[in-house]
Length: 253
Image (cartoon, rainbow, N blue to C red; front, top):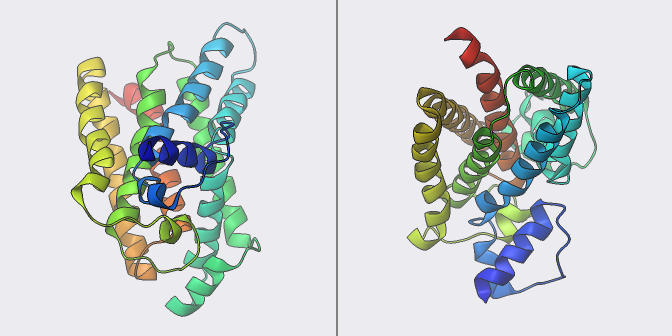
């Protein structure tokens, strides 16, 4: 029952899935560990949009825009918000204390807008290229689940730098039972992708691991720990790198 409540809380926080209002303090430690499973929803929504649009002989750019909208709409744009808040703080070139203050500031600065535009353009161009290929389901599911698994693991294993936000509010211990779900996703999905797609599946998993790992280390050095917004930054960077790799690798090899 506790896991069911935690699952509903996870869906309510990180997706637009309508769920009944549920709150259970005993279930809170399971919310972040269950984040990877919530990645199936944006994957399914984006895959459904891509599949339906594959039957329409229209503008490939418009199709990519609609798929990208479905991708981010599924999570209520919460992770994009983390990307923007982190970008303002990260590129301010201020002291660590000042960066943390900027991270808590709800106002949007120029760095947030610049990084958002760059990321959306990269994702859009990647999806337009992917849209020219025959439809395949597994990347749509693997990419958002793995990105959330990396973000979840980062939150669970890294000291928190803010007292606000889900990274602090839903903090779990470093018990194996809490990191088990992200680890299963990070190990099991790449193996499954290798069986389904060979070296392409392996390459996408490696790209996501490298992007998430580098972003994770960079943020730790810059902020001294992690917060919910910083985890959102890791997630979006991870997904953007994977989408670019999905678009480029088949053309290169």
